[in-house]
Length: 236
Ligand code: HPA
Image (cartoon, rainbow, N blue to C red; front, side, top):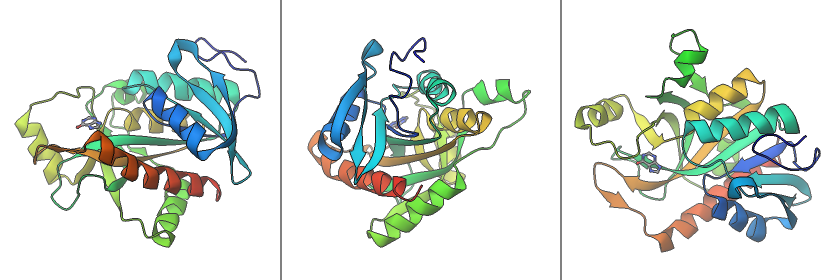
Protein backbone atom coordinates (compact mmCIF):
# COMPACT_ATOMS: atom_id res chain seq x y z
CA UNK A 1 0.00 0.00 0.00
CA UNK A 2 1.52 3.38 -0.91
CA UNK A 3 2.31 5.39 2.21
CA UNK A 4 2.95 9.09 2.74
CA UNK A 5 6.63 8.61 1.89
CA UNK A 6 6.84 5.41 -0.17
CA UNK A 7 4.89 5.09 -3.41
CA UNK A 8 5.62 1.45 -4.24
CA UNK A 9 3.21 -1.34 -5.20
CA UNK A 10 1.91 -3.49 -2.37
CA UNK A 11 4.28 -6.44 -2.90
CA UNK A 12 7.23 -4.46 -4.20
CA UNK A 13 9.54 -5.17 -1.25
CA UNK A 14 11.21 -8.34 -0.05
CA UNK A 15 10.70 -9.01 3.66
CA UNK A 16 14.43 -8.27 4.05
CA UNK A 17 15.67 -4.73 3.38
CA UNK A 18 19.23 -3.42 3.48
CA UNK A 19 19.25 0.28 4.31
CA UNK A 20 22.12 2.69 3.69
CA UNK A 21 21.63 6.34 4.63
CA UNK A 22 22.48 7.63 1.17
CA UNK A 23 20.19 7.04 -1.84
CA UNK A 24 23.20 6.92 -4.18
CA UNK A 25 24.57 4.09 -2.05
CA UNK A 26 21.25 2.26 -2.38
CA UNK A 27 21.50 2.55 -6.14
CA UNK A 28 25.14 1.40 -6.09
CA UNK A 29 24.34 -1.70 -4.00
CA UNK A 30 21.38 -2.61 -6.20
CA UNK A 31 23.36 -2.22 -9.44
CA UNK A 32 26.54 -3.96 -8.26
CA UNK A 33 25.33 -6.69 -5.91
CA UNK A 34 21.81 -7.65 -6.95
CA UNK A 35 20.63 -9.49 -10.04
CA UNK A 36 17.58 -8.20 -11.95
CA UNK A 37 17.23 -5.18 -9.65
CA UNK A 38 14.32 -2.90 -10.39
CA UNK A 39 13.74 0.55 -8.91
CA UNK A 40 10.56 0.59 -6.82
CA UNK A 41 10.61 4.02 -5.18
CA UNK A 42 11.85 7.51 -5.96
CA UNK A 43 9.57 9.58 -3.75
CA UNK A 44 11.71 12.40 -2.29
CA UNK A 45 14.58 10.62 -4.11
CA UNK A 46 14.68 8.06 -1.31
CA UNK A 47 15.57 5.37 -3.84
CA UNK A 48 14.50 1.76 -3.33
CA UNK A 49 15.21 -1.39 -5.35
CA UNK A 50 14.27 -5.04 -5.28
CA UNK A 51 16.42 -7.77 -6.85
CA UNK A 52 18.13 -11.06 -6.08
CA UNK A 53 21.31 -11.99 -4.22
CA UNK A 54 22.18 -15.64 -4.88
CA UNK A 55 18.50 -16.28 -5.67
CA UNK A 56 17.27 -14.64 -2.45
CA UNK A 57 14.87 -11.74 -2.94
CA UNK A 58 16.34 -8.65 -1.28
CA UNK A 59 15.31 -4.99 -1.23
CA UNK A 60 17.57 -2.00 -0.76
CA UNK A 61 16.20 1.35 0.41
CA UNK A 62 17.95 4.42 1.75
CA UNK A 63 16.73 5.80 5.08
CA UNK A 64 18.22 9.30 4.96
CA UNK A 65 19.99 10.97 7.88
CA UNK A 66 18.96 11.03 11.52
CA UNK A 67 16.44 9.22 13.70
CA UNK A 68 13.34 11.03 12.36
CA UNK A 69 14.05 10.15 8.74
CA UNK A 70 15.20 6.58 9.39
CA UNK A 71 12.33 5.89 11.80
CA UNK A 72 9.58 6.90 9.44
CA UNK A 73 10.89 4.78 6.56
CA UNK A 74 11.44 1.78 8.82
CA UNK A 75 7.95 2.20 10.30
CA UNK A 76 6.25 2.43 6.90
CA UNK A 77 8.21 -0.53 5.50
CA UNK A 78 7.26 -2.75 8.43
CA UNK A 79 3.67 -1.67 8.91
CA UNK A 80 2.61 -1.23 5.26
CA UNK A 81 4.99 -3.37 3.20
CA UNK A 82 5.30 -6.42 5.45
CA UNK A 83 9.04 -5.99 5.90
CA UNK A 84 10.28 -8.20 8.74
CA UNK A 85 14.09 -7.81 8.72
CA UNK A 86 16.11 -4.62 8.36
CA UNK A 87 19.86 -4.32 8.16
CA UNK A 88 21.22 -0.78 8.29
CA UNK A 89 24.46 -0.62 6.29
CA UNK A 90 26.02 2.71 7.19
CA UNK A 91 29.07 4.60 8.31
CA UNK A 92 29.91 5.72 11.83
CA UNK A 93 32.51 7.54 13.84
CA UNK A 94 34.57 6.00 16.63
CA UNK A 95 36.81 7.20 19.46
CA UNK A 96 38.28 3.91 20.69
CA UNK A 97 42.01 3.38 20.12
CA UNK A 98 41.62 -0.30 19.24
CA UNK A 99 39.20 0.51 16.41
CA UNK A 100 40.61 1.74 13.13
CA UNK A 101 39.23 3.55 10.12
CA UNK A 102 37.42 1.13 7.78
CA UNK A 103 36.85 -1.48 10.52
CA UNK A 104 33.41 -3.03 10.61
CA UNK A 105 31.44 -2.35 13.78
CA UNK A 106 28.16 -4.04 14.69
CA UNK A 107 25.75 -2.41 17.10
CA UNK A 108 24.60 -4.79 19.84
CA UNK A 109 22.72 -1.87 21.38
CA UNK A 110 22.45 1.89 20.96
CA UNK A 111 22.39 4.64 23.55
CA UNK A 112 21.24 8.06 22.39
CA UNK A 113 21.02 11.79 23.14
CA UNK A 114 17.70 11.86 21.30
CA UNK A 115 14.55 11.98 23.40
CA UNK A 116 12.45 9.80 21.11
CA UNK A 117 12.91 6.56 23.01
CA UNK A 118 12.11 8.25 26.32
CA UNK A 119 8.98 9.70 24.76
CA UNK A 120 7.85 6.23 23.73
CA UNK A 121 8.96 4.64 27.03
CA UNK A 122 7.19 6.87 29.55
CA UNK A 123 10.37 8.90 30.18
CA UNK A 124 12.35 5.85 31.33
CA UNK A 125 15.57 4.63 29.72
CA UNK A 126 14.88 2.21 26.88
CA UNK A 127 17.65 -0.27 26.01
CA UNK A 128 17.58 -0.26 22.21
CA UNK A 129 19.08 -3.59 21.17
CA UNK A 130 19.82 -5.53 18.00
CA UNK A 131 17.97 -8.68 17.09
CA UNK A 132 19.89 -11.66 18.51
CA UNK A 133 19.41 -14.00 15.53
CA UNK A 134 20.74 -11.36 13.14
CA UNK A 135 23.74 -10.47 15.26
CA UNK A 136 24.53 -14.16 15.77
CA UNK A 137 24.47 -14.91 12.03
CA UNK A 138 26.39 -11.74 11.14
CA UNK A 139 29.08 -12.69 13.63
CA UNK A 140 29.33 -16.25 12.32
CA UNK A 141 29.58 -15.05 8.70
CA UNK A 142 32.26 -12.53 9.71
CA UNK A 143 34.27 -15.34 11.32
CA UNK A 144 33.82 -17.57 8.28
CA UNK A 145 34.87 -14.82 5.85
CA UNK A 146 37.73 -13.64 8.04
CA UNK A 147 36.35 -10.11 8.42
CA UNK A 148 37.45 -8.41 11.61
CA UNK A 149 34.39 -7.03 13.38
CA UNK A 150 33.83 -5.16 16.65
CA UNK A 151 30.52 -5.75 18.41
CA UNK A 152 29.25 -3.45 21.15
CA UNK A 153 27.35 -0.35 22.16
CA UNK A 154 26.67 2.55 19.78
CA UNK A 155 25.77 6.14 20.55
CA UNK A 156 23.13 7.56 18.23
CA UNK A 157 23.33 11.33 18.23
CA UNK A 158 21.11 14.10 16.90
CA UNK A 159 24.13 16.36 16.34
CA UNK A 160 26.76 15.35 13.81
CA UNK A 161 28.86 18.42 14.66
CA UNK A 162 29.26 18.04 18.40
CA UNK A 163 32.36 19.55 19.98
CA UNK A 164 31.42 18.63 23.55
CA UNK A 165 34.74 17.20 24.82
CA UNK A 166 33.22 16.00 28.12
CA UNK A 167 30.66 13.92 26.27
CA UNK A 168 33.33 12.40 24.05
CA UNK A 169 35.27 11.36 27.19
CA UNK A 170 32.15 9.74 28.62
CA UNK A 171 31.47 7.85 25.38
CA UNK A 172 35.01 6.56 25.35
CA UNK A 173 34.89 5.58 29.02
CA UNK A 174 31.68 3.62 28.55
CA UNK A 175 33.10 1.66 25.61
CA UNK A 176 30.93 3.16 22.90
CA UNK A 177 32.36 1.66 19.71
CA UNK A 178 30.37 3.54 17.06
CA UNK A 179 28.69 6.92 16.81
CA UNK A 180 25.93 7.27 14.24
CA UNK A 181 22.63 9.11 13.86
CA UNK A 182 20.02 6.38 13.31
CA UNK A 183 20.52 3.05 15.10
CA UNK A 184 18.75 3.74 18.44
CA UNK A 185 15.65 4.89 16.54
CA UNK A 186 15.64 1.97 14.10
CA UNK A 187 16.00 -0.61 16.89
CA UNK A 188 13.15 0.88 18.89
CA UNK A 189 10.73 1.05 15.96
CA UNK A 190 11.60 -2.52 14.93
CA UNK A 191 11.01 -3.78 18.48
CA UNK A 192 7.70 -1.95 18.77
CA UNK A 193 6.48 -3.45 15.48
CA UNK A 194 7.88 -6.96 16.16
CA UNK A 195 10.44 -6.88 13.36
CA UNK A 196 14.14 -7.73 13.44
CA UNK A 197 16.86 -5.09 12.97
CA UNK A 198 20.64 -4.87 12.96
CA UNK A 199 23.09 -2.03 12.27
CA UNK A 200 26.38 -2.86 10.59
CA UNK A 201 28.67 0.10 9.93
CA UNK A 202 32.14 0.86 8.65
CA UNK A 203 34.18 3.43 10.54
CA UNK A 204 34.46 6.54 8.38
CA UNK A 205 36.05 8.83 10.95
CA UNK A 206 38.09 8.60 14.12
CA UNK A 207 36.89 11.49 16.21
CA UNK A 208 39.72 11.81 18.75
CA UNK A 209 42.49 11.04 16.25
CA UNK A 210 40.87 13.44 13.75
CA UNK A 211 41.19 10.98 10.89
CA UNK A 212 38.69 10.33 8.11
CA UNK A 213 38.47 7.79 5.31
CA UNK A 214 39.10 9.17 1.84
CA UNK A 215 36.31 8.64 -0.66
CA UNK A 216 38.50 6.17 -2.58
CA UNK A 217 39.13 4.02 0.50
CA UNK A 218 35.46 4.04 1.37
CA UNK A 219 34.82 1.64 -1.49
CA UNK A 220 36.82 -1.37 -0.25
CA UNK A 221 35.60 -1.22 3.35
CA UNK A 222 32.10 -0.73 2.03
CA UNK A 223 32.47 -3.92 -0.03
CA UNK A 224 33.21 -6.08 3.04
CA UNK A 225 30.26 -4.62 4.96
CA UNK A 226 27.84 -5.22 2.07
CA UNK A 227 29.14 -8.76 1.50
CA UNK A 228 28.80 -9.50 5.22
CA UNK A 229 25.24 -8.12 5.26
CA UNK A 230 24.11 -9.92 2.11
CA UNK A 231 25.61 -13.23 3.23
CA UNK A 232 23.83 -12.77 6.59
CA UNK A 233 20.49 -12.43 4.79
CA UNK A 234 20.98 -15.94 3.36
CA UNK A 235 20.75 -17.36 6.91
CA UNK A 236 17.63 -15.43 7.90
N1 HPA B 1 29.00 11.18 14.21
C1 HPA B 1 27.74 10.88 13.90
N2 HPA B 1 27.40 10.19 12.84
C2 HPA B 1 28.38 9.75 12.03
C3 HPA B 1 29.72 10.04 12.30
C4 HPA B 1 30.04 10.78 13.46
O1 HPA B 1 31.21 11.06 13.75
N3 HPA B 1 30.46 9.48 11.31
C5 HPA B 1 29.58 8.87 10.47
N4 HPA B 1 28.33 9.04 10.89
